[in-house]
Length: 365
Ligand SMILES: *Cc1c(COP(=O)(O)O)cnc(C)c1O
Image (cartoon, rainbow, N blue to C red; front, side):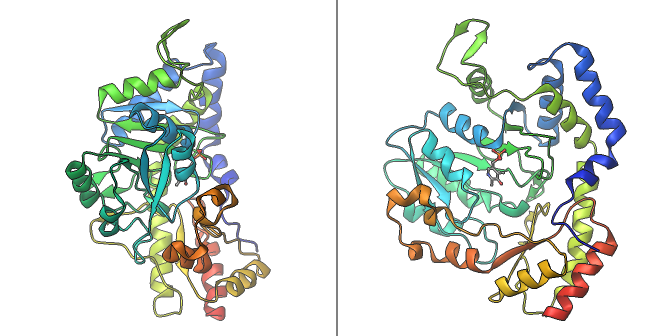
């Protein structure tokens, strides 16, 4: 029996009648750009995230780019980003003409180490951009305090953290703008590309709403040089359906995690560390081993899918060769790329599948 890394088809099939009806509703409505379905999702998503406003966008990368544009970030500005993240975080900064300035992660949580941020702040710094990586919130209070002290904005990359809580409060409006991806594999995923932002600022919500639609509020009147990055109403309808199940699906992820943790304790694997203020949603279950490559290929032979998040840190990517970073410039990020791997987790993973993974791992460890 094979265990896929993530079975997206199973998640669709679980909700097929409801999702199909939601899609039919949009098809029959005759309204295919923005409109009531997108507005309804925005209201429901803002409410879920304990934020005042949500704006639906085409994808998560655009959410980051438009958040930075709305804050006036551009050429000559610096944005502090984690050295350990999916490259989209860096690419958004580069896309607006600013410079990503990497800060190493805390080796325990793999999220940006807030105690190392201040040393990276310069006169050019405009934004702190933490990522809630793998579904675990970054330590926001010290980051927000630094932002107040140095007069900086905070943009959160929450593409992996739908429903996560920091000190009891949902991720969604701690910083100035919180950016979401609804890529199919995320905890709340569309059936195609989708993204959005949440914020408590009416001005920033308004700016991003205008930017996503050609810089236009009134048809054929363009206030700014905007883009086309609108959330598709069919995807909005899918997301509205799935949002009703997000908490239940997170509970299923948590149940798998507790089985993993109780069975893998005391092995050679370095298990995820959860600070007491964090309520993670386990987008990924990331473990660490100095024998990672061997373990991964043995699991693959047994039909168990694993992935590495991420095999090449952004500073070592060809895309950033112009920055001239040494591979060892960010040793914690590099060590993680050498040692981490993610074992399967998802709302439709059966206890039989979880058992197969643990049985195979127990023979290998
Ligand atoms: C998925 C992801 C993004 C980008 O989202 P897209 O919708 O694929 O553009 C950005 N940041 C992180 C951390 C992600 O995981």
